[in-house]
Image (cartoon, rainbow, N blue to C red; front, top):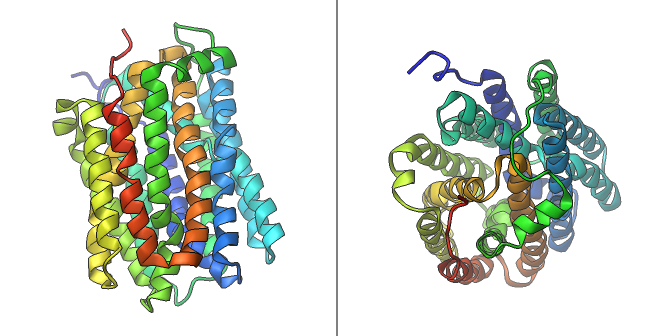
Length: 386
């Protein structure tokens, strides 16, 4: 294999690391920060639903812009800087309306970051070889590098939960401006990027049912992502349980991604996703019956399948269905359906149910809910685009 084929996209790798370090702090600890500000579970659920609400329509818009201009790196820079502005506003927010406005600004831009970075990764793989999983693994590593030490270093969840992601995302924006945003434009053969072509892609039965299944899966995951920190706090457990659980989960995700090239291609995305959904149901069922911190940490070991294999299989599904000219559009449709619709419903419902039922019963509901996407996926035909 030539040196060109072995080339690694270090600027993109650096961006993945920095961005997911941001996620490593904000995703597991932000719900706890909302509780510190005195927000109710329903209010926290509303705030957590802001990102998914904007993910319904903003990522496809950013994806269309990236496909039409052929400059996903430049569009990624705009999304990142907008996300920085949102976190800057959140750092000064003390009331629910202020936090709502800040997160709305952040979400209007940042909800497209992952799909735009994934588009750059897929472009690199097509041109230079390698695997998408091999590039995306660095993002998971960045998550662990931030989440694990953060959980141990803080004595309580406070404003630092916003300031650290603000600094990290700003650094990612600077790195993007110096490298990825300067990449030359690239266009692909296929349908002209338009809202009509995006709609035509989404309404294909294999794509539509796939998006429905991934949406249902993310609804079932919402109690973990939105209520783990409050659940741990209400159980009287220390903050390190949140950090260690998140880190163990992402470590298992890294393991899946590092070994994906050896076994991921042996099964179709459909079979892999069926396994993911059934495993997720078992994970939530275990969390519904335990208050032991180490059992909670052990259950997080299944995150490699619940999210890692889920995400890789989903990206591959859309790669097989969307033509090159709609690559960013296809990935952002996945983001909109899964993290948009699924996140809105999941966070809103789980936030209210947490106040009503408590953590254990909420995870029991999630265990049952996780079986629904398996049913949908079983009915979904998988015929790769010719």
